[in-house]
Amino acid sequence: MQNLPKPLYLLRYTLLSILFLASTHEDSSGHAVESVGLYVLSESRSDSSDALPAALHAAQPVQRTGINLNTDQPMTNVNHTEGAVYDLLQAGRERENTNSHDLPSALPRLQLLRAYEFEDNIGRNVNIEQDGIKVHHLSREGGIVESVDGGERGKVGAYHFKIVNDPQAYNGSGKFYRQELQPRDLPSPYFKNGWQAKFGQEYVYQLRMKMTENYQIGKEYVSFMGGKNDYSLSRNGTALKTSGDHYRFEMQFDTKSGGTGNGQEDGPYASWRRKHFACDGKELIPKKDFNHANFMGAGYHKLSDDIGKWIVWTWHVKWSYGSDGFVRIYKDDQLFVSYDGPNTFKDEEDRAPYFKFGIYNNYWKNLKNNTGSKVQETYVDYFRVYVPE
Image (spheres, rainbow, N blue to C red):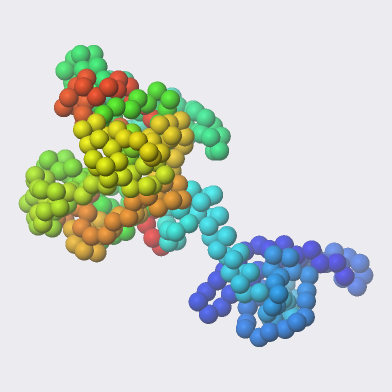
């Protein structure tokens, strides 16, 4: 009898492992018969063998019992090791995370709330009514969705961000230094008013972006994604930035209500946290690894290494002004930033941060032409928002 089993799906519980198998075999008359088996993995040992896929076999086989879902007849002596099954389960879970949704394998199981994929709006800008996204700040160049080479994803629709350091060309509008988008149709009960997060809720924000070959590196820092409490107060929030020739994670928080963001570094009130990183995740020390005046250094992987590459940035965050807050930021599948503790401002109106992404060169705003860069340009393939299941 010929057996050609095909693994369909694997599940693992705390006390049981369950294996679904579909197989094709010949009956006594020589006809092909399709069967599906459900195997409950037990702990009794056996030295018998069966024609399961080679990946399920190992040195110490484990006896399994199952039920043919077509005939309701029991099936026994199905052998593979629990370790091998567990490895396959883990591999399947990681494939689901990293290949299907580009999610880091270390994350918990997630529920996708909203995906802004930019596939249905090629050739135009976005708006709240059609796309659920607000143009938060827009430079004169304007924003538009274009069809571009998405690397391993092939042709993709991507939002084109571009800012040019030419204040005179903008007729005093003041918007030459920033171009950002903000999701506005995020679902209740996880968000308020379609955009404001909630304290104590865990979120996963994910952005796939590329700095183009036109992106010029200067003695400045440039925000490209982060969370901010509100529009009205001078608060810097939590952001991931480029900083000269490397990356910078910056966060401001307040454990008391009413803070305006004018606190001291590492102080107890309206505090700052800043960390600097090379492109490979190595933490950099100001004044030791790089010049703190121009954010340039030597002896590490620099921002120029990432120019022209698609990178997936994933934030796993619990917004809180207490000790239970945390921020984990992944660059592709690598943990890049890890922080535990307060990460936002306490507000009497319960305003946890909203999230935005794009380009914001605050140095152009304050110093105009004094940074050495003239053009900064990126593409964003998608922005996705998840919560743990």
